Image (tube, rainbow, N blue to C red; front, side, top):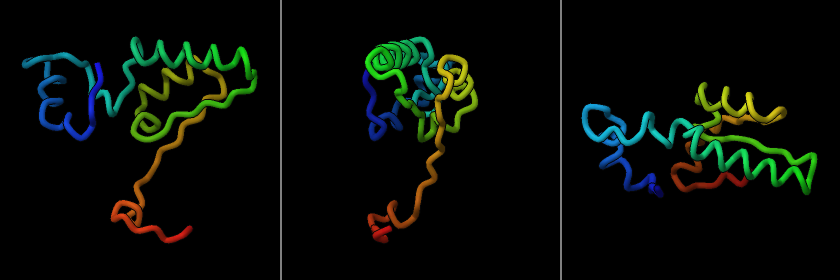
Length: 99
């Protein structure tokens, strides 16, 4: 299922609410779907490391700060790095400081 973050705000709360649709166990923009997306990550990393043994992989954004997602990634890939991105006001406002 493909979701647009821009559009999901209108229906995603109902998709996560078990009393309503209950499509997702958690917000997919906050926490990894370890069965579906996790399988794709596992596949991609395994295939990538067959051609580049020292392939570096990382998780960033909301997923890099979600405890369950971090545990999943560290449990499957030694050396996986997480980065939590912090929004910078100058970029959020469309201004670049040139840094």
